[in-house]
Image (cartoon, rainbow, N blue to C red; front, side):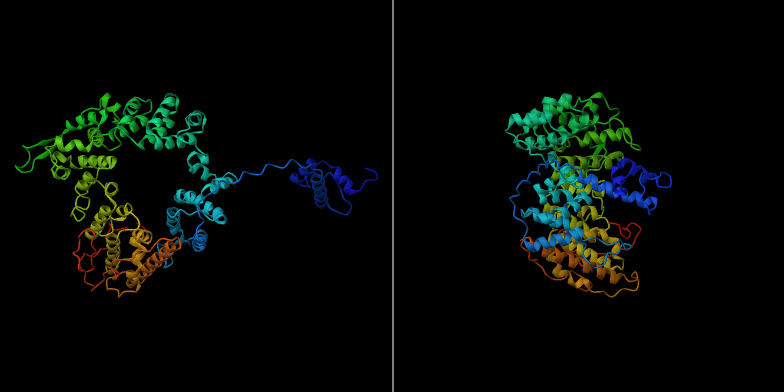
Length: 590
């Protein structure tokens, strides 16, 4: 090209040719430009630089994009400055790597973040705008944080989530995807969104209408029920749990004939929770034909319950939600019996079993080894129907020699039964259980107790930990309970726990170094409780003054209360030590 310079030649070279030469390499493709005194790679880069400037200079300005809409206003006040600084610290904490079950004496700040968020939401505070990105990043990595974090973040979190794909979980976690729902009384808009909206919007809409007007929600669902997908029908049907009443029975009876087995099972479960429903009556008749009192086989004062399990699962039973095929390892007849008893209203049994109270019924002997099957079904019924009287009867006394109670089949079952009891009674029962049986089986039971733990329950846990320390075991065997104590003990209890932070004299048969590790664990517990007290004060929560600020009982410290009494503290000298045994939790286990 006569009279042209290397720059002119580079500017005239198509961009695609330069890219091809760069991808293939100058050894395999000769660059389309040459610069005197420079090798091929340098000439190619020079030409690319020239073309880049030329392409940018040749761009025509595009119309400016519309600015994003402003985030919705959040009327709540921002947290106070001290609490704001505390939140920033909690969000920037990164727990260190594990060290064989040993956690040191420093509080785990990330474990306190859920509690901080719960307190802030209770006090009606809003999140500081500058901490929203860190808060959303934390919630992105921990699903357990999301409900509290999104409630605290408010509408600004949804605004940010629409701009950053990393935070899309906020839209999925918010009912209706963050879309403003019409008010239940706006009939036309409700009907339009129900017929045209996305699935998440429809679920949120149905829940909103149900909470406002149960009948209107049921009528809305009926308009499209026949055309919904099976998985959608199941989700919509589940919304009827809110405000479930006798007026829902005709709709649920219709759902018993649904094409989907899961929908039929859910409809049957809901109907069985209505004691006056026709399904509950049918189940009660079937169950009553299976369980009866036999005075002949019992003693004069104590008759026996006899059980005759169903011999078949007929079409009527299947329609009422009985699953005909049992799981592997389960007999058919016991499987059918359990489902019948579980779906029978518990209020039917006293009149059908001689007018006895639930506690007297549970205490009756059961013939032919059917006791565990029958009691387990009653447990499931008590949980489903949230019947506190039957739950008490099935739980029995917390200090009973039978740690499983007279009717509970497992720790998980007992935990569910406890959830039916009032908060204070629940805490007292667990405190009595710990006093009688120690901490080895208490982890699941503690999980259903209200936070912060009541004073009797907190004292029972601390005293049991103290007993375990005196027995010479390592604290790692109780790391799950210790972690719960850090989150659930009343912060006011820190005053009387200071004495436990000292390193005790180790008995000869103690595990090497156990005393030091226990001291470290109690130091962490006390530090965490004081940190929680500071958090509560920063958010304006009034501290509680403990009724008894004496230190926890230890060796040589007599307790005035009787050991093993529910709701009372126990002393190290009064309760048996917790031995190291194969059944005890291993290091690092709850």
